[in-house]
Image (cartoon, rainbow, N blue to C red; front, side, top):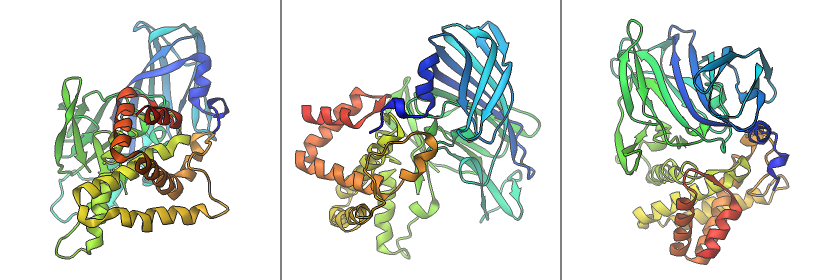
Length: 418
């Protein structure tokens, strides 16, 4: 495994200046819904600055930075004297004329513009054909109607707003967006307030999120209806929402492809019932990920298999508990484990834990080795220890590292203790 010093990442570079994000306050407005699909944004990032510096580097991709200023302790401010771009590594560096002294309360304010793209990454638009009369303000893209949502895993939050887009640089998030009056906006947290915007628009703001990685932030707006429920756990005295929009485990706003969750008892093949149950249970990542990945996040993408392997195993475990008649562990062996072994027999195979130097390499390991071989190893370990012992050890680990980061060696220590 490569050490953190071998990574070309912000979290390593930040050890020099010790810049740490604490909270993001993101507001989006000026949405161009007439076919241009541009938008304006402002992000205020509360920072801890532990040692003096004249430059701050963030991730940004396919955004135009309009202006930047740093506010020191809520009073003195200075605009950036230089803005430089590193397109290869999707970074932007702001240099300031005066040295920034150590502080617990620095505020980096960035005004920018972006595009609601059609690439299914970042802040993007999706086309659909309505089956009922749509709201009047639903945007059109050619002959199709549009809805808008986000997909930030693994490193596409930087497409939507400038940020420290790495999993171990966690922070809390405040989010607001200006949308047409007759459309609906959703985000990770419950709505905080709705107020009037420009003519025909409203500004919807949401409660502050738990501390989390940038890839778990999410929002969506469109001609929606939605189902909302709340967990038993509370955050800041309020229950956490779970909404349903493959799938993505955004904290409090889980999103699914319609083909992954729709099942018709009269017409769908029986095997799809198993598939739907698994997708919902895995995403127990898209619900299991709320613990494996969200509550405790991998320290770096090298530990991706801990996220996806655990969530995959828990997904199968949940189906076995809910539908024992499915006999899913036989299916796991014939489908998941054998697929993993087949891929693992190839010369191009790789270990479940792979050194990742920078974020742009990550997509290469979102594969069956990380998911299926990872979950097979976890199943083997759980069977060796006994599922009850294994689950108790994992539960202890999650409680001990709540809102923190995850490493494989730390998991083994807890399991050995149990």
